[in-house]
Image (cartoon, rainbow, N blue to C red; front, side, top):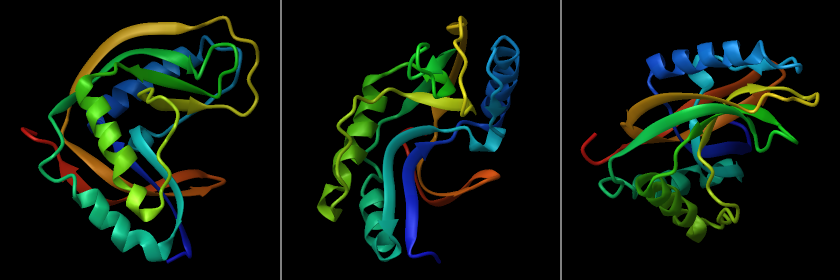
Length: 184
């Protein structure tokens, strides 16, 4: 095990939704001037809380803090409404599927945003903007395409504590622990 781990709390949609999002990303990318790299379906997820790099010795304590969510997270759904350039069409970094905010997703975000503070993990100061990254590029051209509306709704079954290993070939994720949502 490495001395440092890159961790996040996330929601992985079903394989069917991941494949649909990939197909929509492929169609969307054909309208772009910028050449983008479309992510593999199994990499598509909603990041609830990015923890960042932590010392591997903290993993046990982080897992215990994560598992405190058992029985405390409300049932939620992902209402995916459009593809867009994110964070803005003027200065995009990625192509993302916008997920509609809901009180349930906000609660889950807040739970984890505050849940690791006893371990020295600094709470996110930015507003929670739920999205699923579907494609990336390092060199963006000026784009005129903004939104591609559609509707996908999927219940959220669980939230995962995930280790992310980056390499030149892309990210590789390992789910370290999961917590089921109420009524899931």
